[in-house]
Image 1 (cartoon, rainbow, N blue to C red):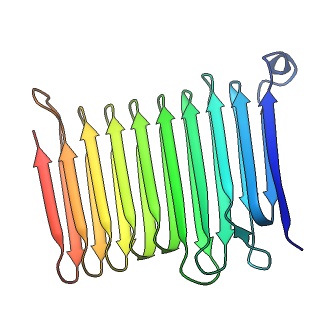
Image 2: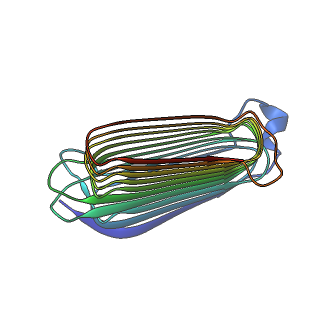
Length: 239
């Protein structure tokens, strides 16, 4: 049976629980959806939150699902979105926004059949953040933006016609992109000091762009691009 509907979970808890249990996760939200045209939204405000959205599974995939997680206020937050889609031409969209001291964001999007598309967005502001996007299929779009220091970002895509974008503003950042298939495009932009970027693409008709630093900046930049296949293009700018 397929389900249609809209589900919104709003979790907003104060600091009183810390008095009784300092290790307590103040906000814990889980959403499970299967079927067509589902929307899930989790909004958490507090120092210790965990949010998980599950849309679809192999036996009952998600068709045209939308999932969004927002976590704000200084503290430790964790957000994860799993989307399993199916059907020719279907698509799923996932978005995570985190503004806190320590944040972890993970998006996993797969399809069980057909040529479909996924969109994944992760935006993080604050220290000690990590972002991971995994997409399997064709026609996928992934974007990661991190504003702060000591950040880590990784995008992995397997299939054809992918686009991956990473932007980091801060110091001691790392960014990785790995794509397998044809017609892939990868872009990495790192501003300020102590950055490291890596792009690996295997297939044909790939393009890779890296930009590190800005006019008047100083930093220990490092850049690696590896492409296997035909008709590849790579551009690296450091200043």
